Image (tube, rainbow, N blue to C red; front, side):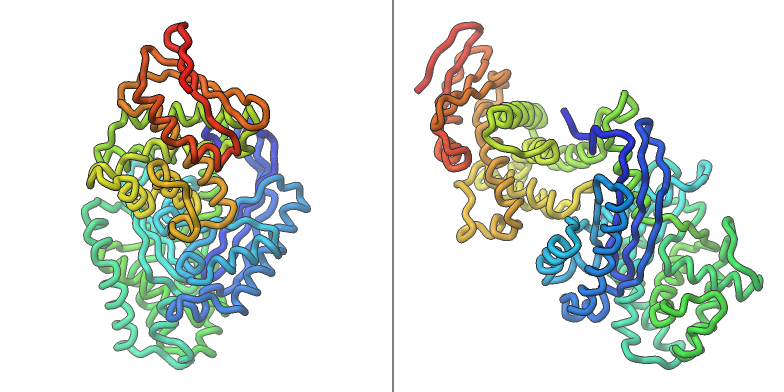
Length: 531
């Protein structure tokens, strides 16, 4: 089972975090023992989410800025030898109705394939990046990352997280809601309205986080770094140093100073980044509210971020000499969903085994040219293809699609989740069509072609275990001429129900692979040809 990120060693990889406020680049050289050298780190403010959150549409000028910076970062990475560039987009892109247009521009103009991730996946990656740079001992902590459009909340220790969530409050979003085009001071009444809004939005998250004993608070993101810079300058008259802890009292007094000033004077506050002066109060209200509601006395600052988590996640998926875990994080995430819905794990694993067998055989025979990345998605679709039965057997493929696409599967971007869901949907449904299947039409053209192949393979694999008895042990595909494919199924006993299950999908096989399918059953060394 090949589920690791790559076989190549000593390679240069670029990681791009396309956020609501800024774009960050991390360029590293990774060695064969998973150690790495940082070649470059860059950050550019683009304000992608500026003016978006009321209309849910990215502005043309914001997209122009983002495309230009991504183009520059991608070119920089390739100039320094990057063989792979991994790019993730977060809140602003995630919520935009015109995101397909934006992603297409990035692909065409910056030659960059950008994957949109969920808020919880953003929280997980941020946690990975921040926790990997800490020494927390045996303490549990609250990790908070305040972005432009969302805030990610994680409770965890040095080695694992116990709770994570994402909130639709961010420095840009709140500034647009409560302070748009207002360059004057922010009075106490308005600031309290902002805090009330944050509290109301976060109420359930706060209730869950309060169940844990929080020994410390770790803040990341430019907003929190800048608030800490302001507080240290105000109280200590110096630059912030690693290890500085900012008390809640210091934060409150720094916020009072910022609110009392008009924008033009706010930009001059010692320690502030003038480019953040118009959104710093919105970000401060989030941190203020979280610390107050969770009784946190101080916070520490981490300069690590989601892009560092992207690197840690990449390293964890690398194929190696046993250092990698038998079960990857992505597989664990899939199994967690399946088990929570009481799926038939034995049947699911057997179908996954047969699906991967079919995928490999079809690729070896030149029937498709998909890679191990699509192979991995097929495996997860096979594991989850029947989870909808927990709701109802009738049309269970529709329920499976719903569970998969709404479960916030961690470790996956939204396109991958959509492909897994659609593959599970069409394992039992007719061959997908754009006009009649909105779930299929919503995919980009590349993903549609992938789903046609994966859906057909999964349909046949599921048919090969129609009795749920595991009678078919393995399969082989042999192409005969240009119009026929012979499927040899190796079984422990005669299985006419499984043969019928395969034949039921002959039409889908013909439409996908342009060949007629013929089945040959091999039972304990005895061949029986089934036309």
